[in-house]
Length: 456
Image (cartoon, rainbow, N blue to C red):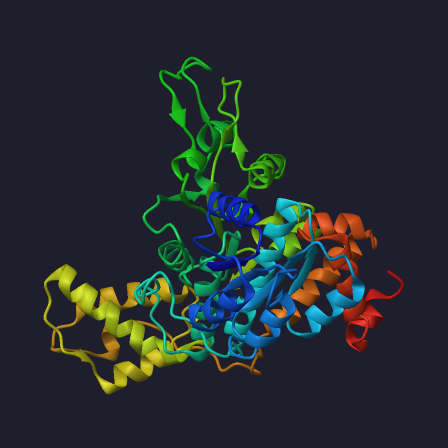
């Protein structure tokens, strides 16, 4: 994430830049005057601009008005001592994302930055971002995820944007759809790709060892603790912690994980002092966690902490234009692994591959190709070496909901499950009560949501 702070007070500039760097927001530039800011913004490709209003010469509103049309991909957050409704309305009409009145709570500022960055991601995912910027993690950050499918490309564009924030990412999808590969790409595209990537299969951790494995322990804290041991959170400090199969975490252990995510501190077993951990959380599951929340097997507040940036990977049957592309990669890898020299697939074999059901998705396709490489006797792989069945024709084509519709549905679900309690809904969603109220007003303008919200 690339941020510019514009303020004529040098103390405010330096202190805010220090806070943002501590928060690991990547590249943070400062500018003390409006006229210089105009030139920097037009040519700097900034993601977020934190803009003061009261400045000598060119003020904040003039900066916003002079640059917004040139950098539609940049989000502006106003930071000012001017607590005036008319000024706030004018700034928002000129294109500012948020209007914050000084003194500003750091957590409120962080939340506004994250939400503004999420809006960039939504535009990228929907293909409406005017001039998408190149991914900071380099063109190869997501090279393991092969695709030529338009929807998958939109997903990767969204993932690239979200990788540059510190938001927790929840990757959902059927088993074998490539969730771990995407998590590795998010880590490589983040601002700390050289930091550790710690992968944990949550379902494989015994309940009795949860605290020791995740938070660590001190020597002598229990029988068998022969030395100090850093837990997964400490091991991932300055990097990414990937929690695979997060839906399998037992209900009584979920508050412990939620506390660490919210407070960013851990305490080892047998220790008396807390330790700060700066860790990006990426989690994955093939379960429907909304259903799990309704069944009271997963906490709603934990779900909404984990899914600040949700990404759903479609099954292979919904991206059939990728089948031959993936099969070609797997063929090359399998030939190298087993010292075979094959030229490719026969036309009949390609047809069979394209018609396959693949309930195991990409993982199953990989295994099918590897078996075919071992069984083939000629230079080409033929249908009799594949051993797969054709998929049944779908009764109808399923359209995918947009991220915006999904976000509205999630908001309505939380609001109804809290009985319309604005404060509790804001706590679960990680936003302010004022934002909850604004969202309700916005949704009630749409008849579809008005009837659902009722008198809430």
